Image (cartoon, rainbow, N blue to C red; front, side, top):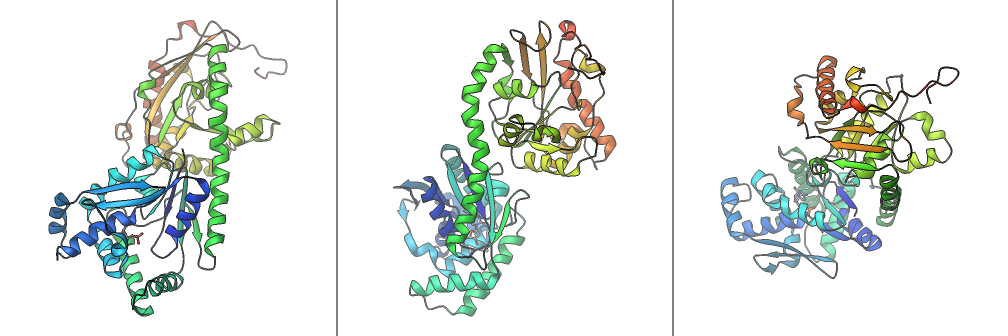
Length: 437
Ligand code: DC
């Protein structure tokens, strides 16, 4: 499954580009603006002002909107009827923009949009897809163009439909709608932090499609590798390493999450990845990226590169963005491996708390235990998923090192509490030269 979110102001060409991409990728296209337009049309037909919030909200009880797909084409039934092009007039555009600023209207349409994306691979366009509707979309694009370029396109479209509007009218309405849509209090039209900005003022539709397709292909390489490798590698790995998992039901299936585990051996991440029902995004030291084969795998898995010991701000930002984007970020608060040491007696860094504070994401404590000695064939690896620690339980007020440290300690205590270290693996002997194996 892939979910592609395309947000941006009116006239940027989102719908034509999204339709073409949906055809190319063989997935469905969801035009969310059409949902707001149907409500706008209903309100206008009732003779109600779309700015009269109270009356608009009371009308929602009379409306049923069904979103269907016939031969891959979206059809919306407003109280059982497809309104066709009646929702495309300039009056309905302005009404849609006005009703879309009403929180109850947005709430009313939320589940329809989300549930469609739960069942299908989609390309969805709108204003808040990357920020609110599908914050964990695999690809997020913010498509925009200058107001002049967008007004010219919209004007041409309307002329072709036989409409008698003037360019000035189209331009002025576009600017007003931009303002409404981007400054409203709820779910304004803004670029998601992790969305890729494309300004297509000087691009053709074909060029815009090509550049988005390139981004989609690059992203799906990572996903394909994971979804191709996991069903093959994970069962073999689980068998050989005798991986036992408990608490899988504690893993939330959607939304950004920070997974924090104790670190025993180099393959902890594989042990967790082999049993975790969601794809992990992990942070890997930069040296790993240049190891032959391993480097290729680490890159293909979409790992975040960190320059350890240099206070790598870029890696922190990328980690926060990954969690905010709805991914499962896997972190080892101990910073490096502690084979054979009770985690309760090790020191921890405060990165997990820092990332939790900035991303606002919840945290999943995970404890790894190895029975019967060090990692190796026929040892038993146990991965225990603990209960989610809500971000609000981490005691953040204004941020700062002391808060990050206290939060990381709370998280790591939850990890430690799940462990029974009476059968810890023997410490790994040091090689000549002092390096651990
Ligand atoms: O994309 P469009 O022009 O058909 O959208 C019509 C209006 O609906 C737009 O001015 C703002 C609103 N809208 C929204 O608020 N959120 C969306 N996801 C899609 C549209």
